Length: 477
Image (cartoon, rainbow, N blue to C red; front, side, top):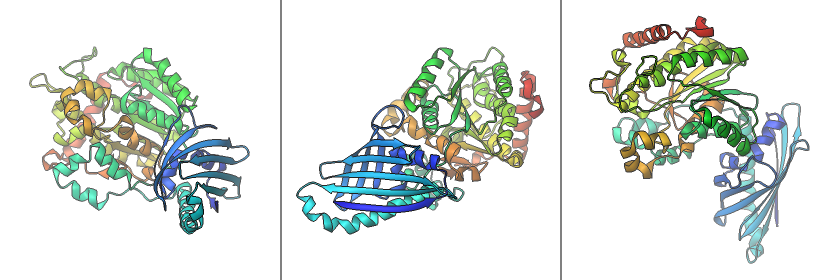
């Protein structure tokens, strides 16, 4: 047997450190031996939850099945039993409050099966080094003091060539990027997140992860018949009972206005607003308010919703707005005169891309305007993700690219990171893909002028007034 023992002090409340450590999926963020980790059992993390961790040890890469055998926050104790055919490991972690945070006492007892037990002493030094490095990694994760995100030189070089840049949208781009990510240990308990388009695809994946992290969620969906299913599913799978559903067709500005009014009546500060709702429409359609539907849902709606909720964002103190855009925007310039796609030569994918290009410009403008209110405004591109929306709107694309598409969870990752990570709040007015700032233009022909940007903002403000969407928060528009 080999007994490893490490102690660290971290600048975090005990409850936050406890929650982060108990979810053993997080080992991949701090344990130098963990190549990957996943939860095997459904439901919230609790005693009896099982995890699979792929570890690199002196013996080589091994698959460890962990069971959370004790989870006592009041007593400050977490215990896990891990096993495979070569050895077992019993981890016992004691957490105690200190004047500046939490002291963590971490013990791991390795027991080897024969014939490896005869060679245990040969492994001791290597295990001790890795154990020390892992616990120091845990301290780094919980101290959570990382610089503002910067673009890597590899990404910068890749964006100079169109094909390498596009390849980053695939699941292989995600896998490459994830090898270099920093830990994300910030607690979301008590943080209010408003998320639109939450009943499927990357919206549902983001809602699920944010619920696991303890956020108080207000989820905006269009289909009332899915509300109870969504709420019950998230509560059952995450153990989070702070989930509220709002019903609104966000393509209708009167419903956006009513939603804004309802949220103002609650008078609850909003820490994070995620504008995710979207769809690709073929053929061209108009809403019953007489507005072209792509423009209404993809651009005018997030503009109106965010402007209307700006006072509640400012009230939070340090809020974040996350606008979900698309790689299609790289193909289109800003065309203020074609925000509502004309009937002649209509293409749903072009209309979609133009709206996302305009939303990127709005993101940059708001970042400048609202800096004084401590509101960080960023956009994210989920990459090419395999979602119900993509399958129905772009069946040919979905069929051809199916093997390289990301999962909804991979597509949603940067939404979650922008909502959670401390360092993400140190950036504003940026476009992110895989937690990294990206260029907003791959082609020089898509670049807009300052005059065009100004016209866009004035045009959107005029539309908001013309469609009668001032509502309770008219002072912000």
